[in-house]
Length: 357
Image 1 (cartoon, rainbow, N blue to C red):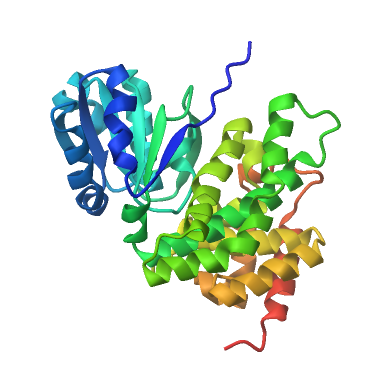
Image 2 (cartoon, rainbow, N blue to C red):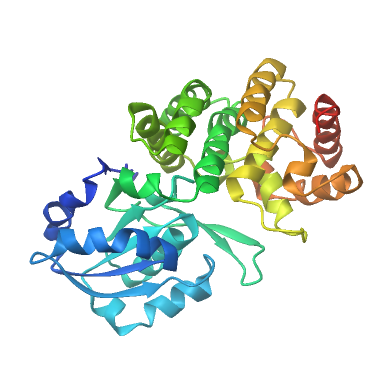
């Protein structure tokens, strides 16, 4: 038996007005879970939309990373146990932590992304880390959130770096998925559907990404901005719900997951490192035309395309490739991806930007 759930969502500056009508069918009480800044950005408007219709029992910090320990702490909170539903507010790590807690407590969850940084709000996928910040595993719920409310006004006033890195993360989806499924002789219907959806994701971002970034920078809600938000959150999420983890990622995410195992001078956003890793994938696989288009786009938006952009150097290239080569993200590939292949691609990509300052 196959149970396949697809995300539903509301988008607009008035998206929260739809909360009572959609969530009211699932009960009368809710708790809000999220990060401190995300709750400050979204909670006033969310509470206002619920006045006289839904009771908010409390608002709680999710923790400081998406860990099983943080989810367990949330599950022990009396108000969380008592609530009919959970409202997850914030970025990927906050949302994933709340998704885990909701699954364990068997409660319906609704998501309220405050960042346009990844597809976590609309997927059943939860990326879990160890308490020390290193990658732990990908964990799956039975279904994605019951509904997602994307308030474009809230997203518009989020930190620029997350919007920028979100574009970088979403760029990976088309290239990684199509690479992963390429070796399959027979593709099941749902997996094939995911690959078909993925097949236009990166192309759309290359076409509309700059205009969306310019709208964000100018503080204006435009069709291009909403298109980019939906590409980053919804389109990539549709793909993720159709594919298992092995097919959902490849070299780009292997580079990121390896990157988390090494100390750096500062924190590097997930999407930024994945973006760089995707260029490594295209170089390694000889997709030079696609690589050059993406490279030009990355240079235009100052997205990572060199080792230095992700806190690495020629001296650490081997180490990065070594860590990446051990990751599960490479399990589903059309050929065996080796450490040497990754390192060679890193060095080849670096040569293309040798004269950049």
